Length: 404
Image (cartoon, rainbow, N blue to C red; front, side, top):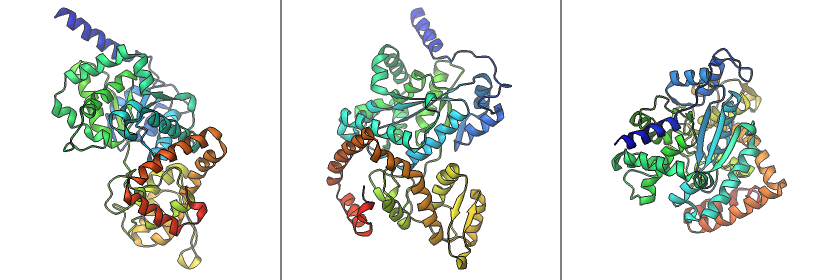
């Protein structure tokens, strides 16, 4: 019994962050403590807890932030551009960011048919996209492959996973299955039941101070905080959950990689972007549940800090909106119509995506990765009839140069 208590104490100590001198009066990257807090806080739709975040920033000049992703096919614009925006804010505020390339997790979740080599090819391809789109301060960003890191430190990782599994019942773990894009009602494989225990362990394995993932990952991050209570760890990981962009069609709560009409993808050509935005749900005068306005709020304004609408003089002439609040006032009144908003949105999105397209044309390594990913994607598309219908429709309405 005494030996078991000693082992638990050692585990708690290994998870505890190192003590650091207060930096509350120190300027980091030209920003005060309050400015750093506000910049980081702006990322999250929810923060658990704000006082803990402020205290962390006061005591630690370079907090460690963790984000992760399954390499599983195409990258939609939220995963590509919004992640780049968020990572840039974090590194500007002095944080170090560890991006967990969850190749083993994708295999557990049966992505790419469970083929680890294909999963890793996709992972390399997605990293190329982030670098091309404008993720900066890369000296403060680490891309860590789960298979490599876990194998290298298996003696640390697996006892942690086992302890988390031992302290939670099956019902609590199944409640976390949303993190895999699954429902609690789905028939889960044993691997998928094991997945949340591993993702919870990642937080401590990576020594993360902040979990910066989407709202769909909230439950497993809360599980990590509950685990801290179980092991009597005072310093809990702070949860900073960003907003999830909806799909482009009416009633789509989130984007779907399996439905190409629901999202803009990072390698979409100009004609594809134009067609998808043209067909997107955008009711006049209605702000709530309007995906085009959400794209403008969460992508265009953070990226450009303004939104330019070009229109004929009889329709009000050109106008540059400096903030989202100004835009929605005019939209609700009908002074800004979807017929003018949509082309402006398409133009702005294409401007963001152009460096990505150029990179995959001019860089030989990136071009080869895209070619290999497309081969796997074409095989998958042939197995899904409605995807073929969508691309046939795109072919009929686009110029030949507008096809990926």
